[in-house]
Amino acid sequence: MPETVTRSKFEYDPADIWVLDREDIDALEIGSAILGTGGGGNPYVGKLRARQAIDDGFTLSVLPLDKVPDEACCVSLGGIGAPVVGYERIREGREGLRCVRAIEEMQGFPVDLIVCEEIGGSNAMEPLIVGGMTGLPVVDCDGMGRAFPEMQMTTYSIYGHTSTPSVMCDVHGNIVIFQHAVTELFHERMARACVVAQGGGSDLASAPMTGTFLKKFAIPNSYTQAVSLGRAVIDAKRRHADPIAAICERENGRHAFSGKITDLKRHLRGGFVVGEAMLSGIDNHHGEDASVLIQNENLVFTREGEVAVSVPDLIVVLDIDSGHAITTEMLRYGQRVAILALPCHPLLQSPAALEVVGPKAFGFPDIVYRPVAGG
Image (spheres, rainbow, N blue to C red):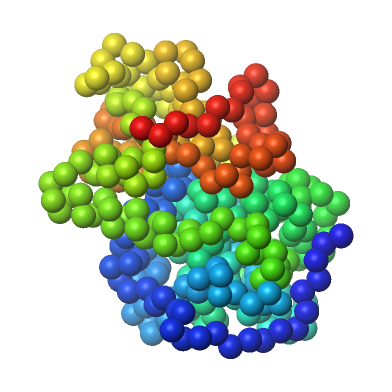
C-alpha cells in the first residue's frame, strides 16, 4: 500500500539551511554535469536560470536530509523529455511552479519541502529554482545519485513509493494530471507519450512522500556531493593539476579510456535521445577502439568489443583538457574525450534495483552488471 501524506506544516531551524550563492551554482553546474552521465538536461542552461533566480531575489536553499521531520510533505520534481529539446527550446520558466501548485490543490494543503528527482544535469537546478519561487528549501538528496532516462528508475519508486497522482506541465501552460497508474512503468509510458505531444520537454512533480520514507530510501547528500565535486574540478584547474584525477580520487572511480570520437549516431525516438559514440584510442589507449551506447544518458561502455562498464554505475564523458562533462546532445565528431567509470550508490545495486536500472532494464539481457572497482 502506498503511504499517506497528511497535513503537516512545520518550521525548520534556520541554522540548518544552506543558502546557495553564485559560486555554489557554478560548482553545481560542473558537479551535476559529471553525475548526469551525459543526461539530466544541459546544466549550463540550468545554471543561467538559477543565477537569474538569485538576481530576481529568490533564495535557493538546501535542508539536510536528517533534518526532515518524519511527517513532512515532500514532493519530488524534475524535467522529463529529450535533453536536446531542453537545450534548444526556451522554457517559459514556471512549469515546475505550476506542478507544485497543482499538487497542493489536489491534496488540499501546502507542500513542505521540494525534493530533487535526479541530481544529474539541469535537473539539479530545477528543484532549487522552484524552491526559490515557493519559498521552500530543497532536501539534500535525490532519487538516483546520477541521471537515468525513465521515471520509474528512482530509489523512490524502486523501494515502494507510488508516484501518482502526479502533475506534468509544459511551456505552453498545459497541465496534465496522472490520477493513477497500475505500475510505475505504466506511469512512465503514459507520461512519455504525453511529453512527446507537448513538444519533447516538460516538468513533472510526483505524489508526495513522507519524511520517514525519504530518509530511508533517498540517495543522501546529493547537493553536497555535486557542489563538492564541482569545487574539486575548479580547484584542480586553479592549481594547474589534473581535474580528471581529482574527480576519480573524490568519487573512488577510474579513468577508463582516452580517445577521439570517430563516429556518432544520435536521433530522437519516443521522447528519448538514443545512439552510440564510437571512439579511437589516444595516449595510453592508442590502437584501441571503444564505444558508448546512449539513451539520454551513457548506458554501456565497451572497450575492444568487451563490456567494461554498464548501468547503474556512472559512465562519464569528459573533455580531456578541461575535465568538464560533455552531455549527450553536445557530443561531436573529433572531440578528444576521457571516459570515467564511477561507482553508483549501494541503493542502486540491490537485486530489486538492478531489475529496474541494470543492463537488462535497458534491453541488454546478456550484459552482467559488474560493479566498478575504484582506481
